[in-house]
Image (cartoon, rainbow, N blue to C red; front, side, top):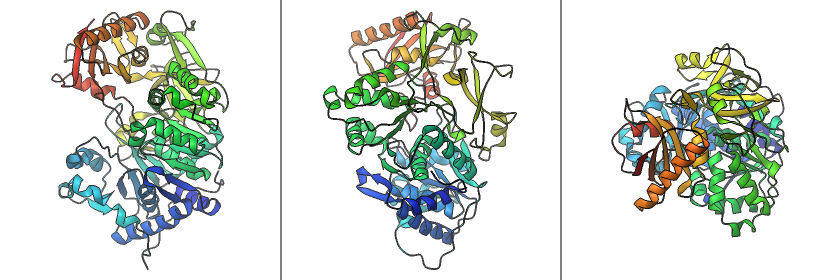
Length: 562
């Protein structure tokens, strides 16, 4: 870990370059390696070029780049030029010719006047459609190796200056810019390293995008902060070939995996039983599971499936975090087994109380423990009346500490609303037991029916394993035309025969009534890949709710009210 006197990400890069110059980032799909020495040297050249082009201190620079060395070179080059990097999502499934229209709200919100993009994408993006006043920068030209002569000197950022702005994925609301200072970033990285027991001998292998907090902080920056070797895949490569990705992970003897809950299901489904025997996962120290609700039964299934490959069950590492706190909020103790609290669903939803039951009891729900607050961070549970709650009472999670953001960029109103007495209001609901955190859902997502409250996670958890539901693709929400709202379970399927579709819809209704207790439900079956997802794979309930209120979608295969 970098020494305590290091106070900015740029200083961390310089320290890592001097300590571990030959380590760095391997990009297998590109057959490319970027050492920490090259990153430090070449990012200085980028900084000089940006300053020569007129970038001013404190100006945000959008980075619209694919997975590869150009992102990190641009990210640190912008910082060393005095600017603020803003990683932006670029997804292959979108019509790029209209992408500036998609970017417009973020460009306006962040007052982004500089945009770094690969030359090969400029024509596809339609450079002529770029907003007036936007400076387009060719990333290839910006990061090209070579001397810039007597260009302006790089700028050393201050700890309280912005290190980066991270626009949230929009999984619960419109995207908003999380403003992270260098002091925030360093505090967050030190918490991650101390609480997760990271060292320079760890080897990272990940695929999450660099514009996602788990990709940027959890993989790229944590690797650099420790001087670790990192292997970086693109999200597309992981989704296309999970078996090949895991075989590579085994080959390089990676010790750290970081991914959301859905990725564990993707690996379970995408790796054939016969392929497991060829893997060696004994090197895995931490398999970090975060960014979305952690499924207790999926964790068990993952551990069981890959045990023959040497995966130790205590390597499974469910955590809680968010971009507003530089990723990490709670971590388990390293090496402890996964704790699952079996509780009564109805009491959890209606009374916001924890009543423990046997796993086999009707209406039981397994809630996975996500550890205790990371070093330097405080956590409290607050009730609807603002009172701090004790153990086994469900309320909103609030955080306080040096890693917590200073606010949303250029949005004082939203910033004022999200802080309560200096504490960050996360919008997540949960409880504590013996100091451990258990998250049960999002406050905005709670479903109401006949005076009863239900968590969408409960419905999704019992539907996801059903045969016919494609790779766990399902969401639950209150939707339908205005004035006719009802609880809807929408599931992806590869089935096409009417009788099979009706059978699956009725099975979904049956299992939800029996295990969750809903009296009525509407089931919508849609084609595979129809559910909106964020760039990290998180299902977007609010998008699907909005679609359900509009005209009939072409992806709809079957509809049944029960």
